[in-house]
Length: 225
Image (cartoon, rainbow, N blue to C red):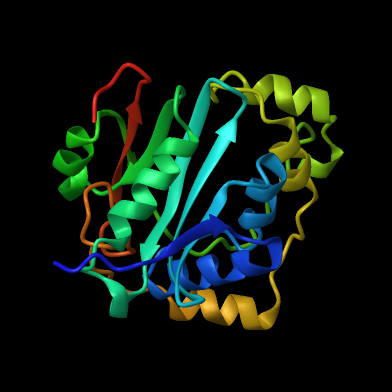
């Protein structure tokens, strides 16, 4: 196969919307404002692949200090799949997080591909969906809006379940808008459909509303590719 020339670079903040739109097109459910929080945690995390200046794929490789990182938004645009671009993006993201324990989410069907890249299943996530309806019960007094929680207390609690400090992420996450714009909400509703595997390369991640079970995997620095 002819090796296609492409450039992989860091996305500018105003370009990250493209990655979120691609994820929505795949039937994934990225949070309406999550990208801003991840950018606050690691402004260099979002990578884009370009061919002749045209964006053709992306990956996020968020570093949390020197000990942990997380791979996400691994997407190659449908018209550009099967040309080796996904693997080049994957390698760029993994290289950026070298020396760290690396986590990612993926459907069980991709577990063997992850194993070949040195990952091992950590736990299984199951996603449930529904419509929240207002009830007559009063909110318990100890349940408060997140914005009212002191940041240091939130960070301390977060460390009980997350393997690295991420104060910048939590600060941005706590301050995100409570609701998306009508256009954004419409886009997210329209995106809830099945998706095909992304990129066709080992490590590509495919999640959809029709496949709610996902596996959290981790790769340790001593693992071999």
